[in-house]
Image (cartoon, rainbow, N blue to C red; front, side, top):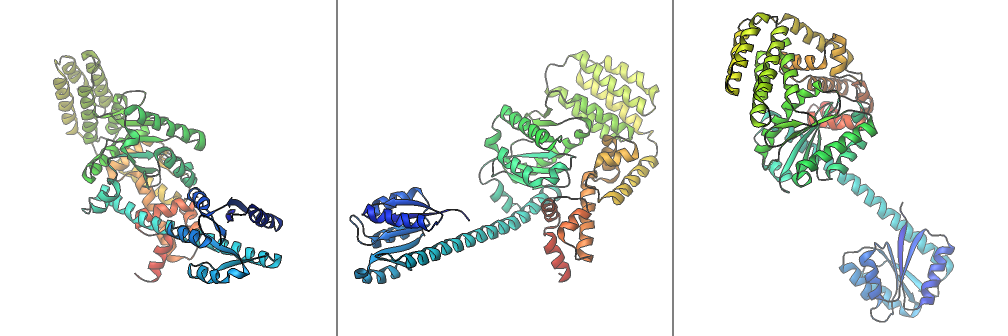
Length: 512
């Protein structure tokens, strides 16, 4: 319990000091304040939370009764003690009418003084306990309310539910927001989630919405004012990378979207930043992508190298639609950004096409398109040459039996190892002797599902089975499906199912 504050009000300093000496004599752990009249007492109480008010009745300027009336009028609720002589007993009745139940008579008897203060401190303790319980209840209710809202928000962003009223009210009441997705394949963030969430709220302000999406991704909706300039956004991203490295020894991949004014803007922007997450497998350390109004840019280097790495991965999968998408992004990037010479553009795209033809074992198609690229007079002609070749190569596409086998092996490995808290894309890729970039792209092409989401969903399904068929503790359930941090597991389970694990089990038992 915290240390309580008592205010002693009496126009005679000898009386005030005498009471203070008794408080110290009986070693009550109280912070003691003094006032010589009601007016001074009210000034003190305006600036300091007083838990116990001990006031004489007869004082100049303002009587004790008038003081207590003003205290209640201001909405303050200290434990009030009337200090009075025997001859003023009629005041006691008025004090009781004002809700004052404690009465200290002059001259003070030590036994009565001690009994009264033991009682008053016990009342303060009971109030603090009730206050703490109320705060816990308030936080619990808010957590449940937030969980329902987060689930509704994710469903709106990913599955296109139509109910946007609550989203508009809760997210945009304070103005524009900027969506940010944080992604990390380190288990440190999940393991120390409470600490990491506190770091996020300290960096991005408490009103920022923080939502666990799945095992590796967190969605932030940040007030636009915090990211008012590109430089300010870069500074915050760099601080987050530094925190992640120094406190959690982990790399983090950050995608910062554009400003959103409505739920429709938010859904469109969310899907746009989701697409950028595929590039995290092509970088070796923490980085961030920013929307600079002409497209996403990567810190410290341009995006072209990532686009062409993704093109090569798609070529290995004979994913021609994926190759076309990445080439389209590369052309858009070139068109929107100034400073690229004609020869650089021709060289870059001809090298990209050469690599694709080598991967696809179609080297015989290479020279003609390279000649067309170098003979082009505009970016449009370069683009036409590239897409003409891709369309021709697509017609000769082979079977995908090997790729289907790898996806099946990946699923099998996930099913066998979901209990490992270190399970992630890199572990599965290492087992299959392929790169994480290749596996992530392959899994999405073959199944239409992100492999990270697949791992997270599988763990949640296994958790449901344990909750339905056993009575083991929720913390043990979390550990058995690969989560060392129970709080993180509960939050993730709620965001995916709409219920806490305990509530889910209760509903199953009641056949709801």
